[in-house]
Image (cartoon, helix red, strand yellow):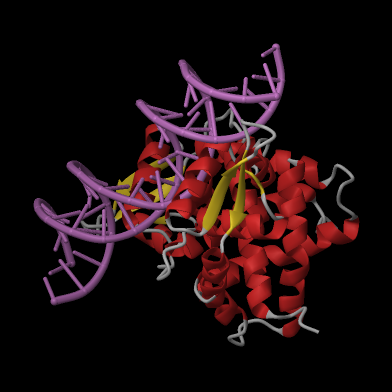
Length: 145
Length: 145
DNA sequence: TATTGTTATACTCTATAACTATA
DNA sequence: TATAGTTATAGAGTATAACAATA
C-alpha cells in the first residue's frame, strides 16, 4: 500500500493548503489587520521585544518584507520601536497595549470564521483533533524544506 | 482540556499553512510551471474536459484568474481549447499529451522537494500518516468557509 | 436576464538590488 | 567585512469592473 507515499502526500498537501490560504485571505477583515500583519504582531507578542531581522528569520521572510509590515503596525500604534543604546544598528520592537488589544480583536475575525466552519458540524471531534495535531507538523515541514 | 478549542486550532493552522505556502512558492521550478498553473492543469486532468468557469468554481478562484492561467497553459501546448458546437459560449478544455507529461515532470520539483523533506527522517511514519489524512480535511475546510 | 469568456486595471505580498549607518 | 535597517523596483497571483457574445 502506498498510502504513505511521501510524494503523494506532498502533492495533496500543496493543493489543499493553497486553496485554504487563498480563501482565508479573501475574508474581509474589519479591524484591518492583514495576514502578514497579524502574523508579525502575534509573533512579536510571543517572542517578546526583539529586532525586525530576528523576526524575519523566524518567519522565514526577507528583512525588507518584515520591515514593511512592522512599519505599518507602528503607524497604527500597535508596535513600538526603540533604538538599542548599546548597538546603534539595532531597533528593538515591542507590542503596545493597543497591539495586544488588536490581537484579541483579530481572533474574532479570520480565525473565528475558520473556527465557526470547524465547529459547524461538518467536522467530527476526531477530525478536529487531527487538524490540531497537524499544525506543528506543517510548521516543521516548512522549516525543513 | 481545551485541546479541541476550534479557535486555537484555526489560529495555529493559519500560521503554519501561511509559512508553508510561502516557502513552497519560493522553490525555483525548472520546468516553469507555477503553482496556479500546476493546480489548474492537474485539476483539469482529474476532472476531464470541462470549461474554464467550471474549473474556476471548483478551484474557488475567479473566472478571470483561471482564464489567465489556462491561456498560459494553452500557449505552451499543455491544454487544448475547443468551442462547444452546441453552445457557442462554452469553450471546452482538455489536457494534451504534453500537458500530462508536464504534470509528471512537475511532480519531480516542488512536490519532490517537499517529499524529500517528509522522508528525510525528520518525520516519523505516524506523522506522515497524520499529514496524509489531513489534506482532504483542509480542502473541505476551505470549501466550508 | 443569465452565463461564458475576455480585457483592463489595481491591489497584496514578497523578492532582489542597492544603499546608509554602525559594529 | 559583517550586520541592521531602509528605499526603490519588480514580479506573482488575485481581485473588481466593464464589456461582448451567446443562451
